[in-house]
Image (cartoon, rainbow, N blue to C red):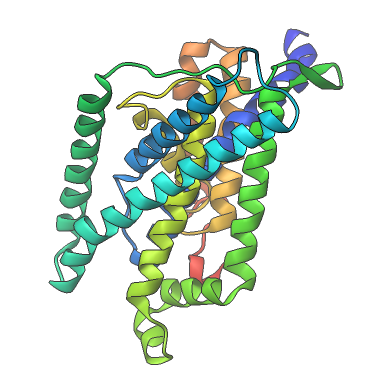
Length: 310
């Protein structure tokens, strides 16, 4: 009876966390789609974007004597998202140039990419730890976190609504970009057959770079939303990164809509499982569900290559 009573509240909470997982997971699935490689430094792109957006928004919030309201709150959130996205994009750009492109030029084996990405990840974690003394960095919310409305008795507060709406907008924009724009066609062409795409006049190196940047934009903006909700630290990217990678695999690695679906499903499973059992078991439950789904559908829920997606 307790679960039935809490069902809608658990659903809303799961949608909030699932939206964040989906935004981060898209970076994994985009890079895998065009390179057939997992970007193991993507969680640090998320972390660096979080710090950039958090410091920008915190500086604006501290300029007010009271909690900002109205358009001021909206402006602060937008600035945080924009700066976070730009920092994430800059980190992803640097990562592609330093850790991936030199290896592609030398036709390096896949193991070299893995080692290079892990090295970049460790460098970013320790650099951030040195800069910010390995402490949690927090900020006051740039808005009053009150109840906005109820859904079947469940409370939807301002923070939850902001995260879900912003994540939904980013997911829709990316889906539109991949499915309906010239750049999206190029990304799908490279994902399907890079050699043929080159013969058709597609600049593969440019597409790969832009794919990294797009993933970095999403991860940085998602990092700000996460840091605004919780806090930022040099190792904050590990757990969300693992969860986002799980979401990408769950939905079908290399599939944009699969990453979105996988993130939402993972968030809901964690929310329901944490209530039915114990909160400390929610990670175990999430990965157990992943294993069970992959046993039935080894390619994930919507498993197919990005080049054949939507």
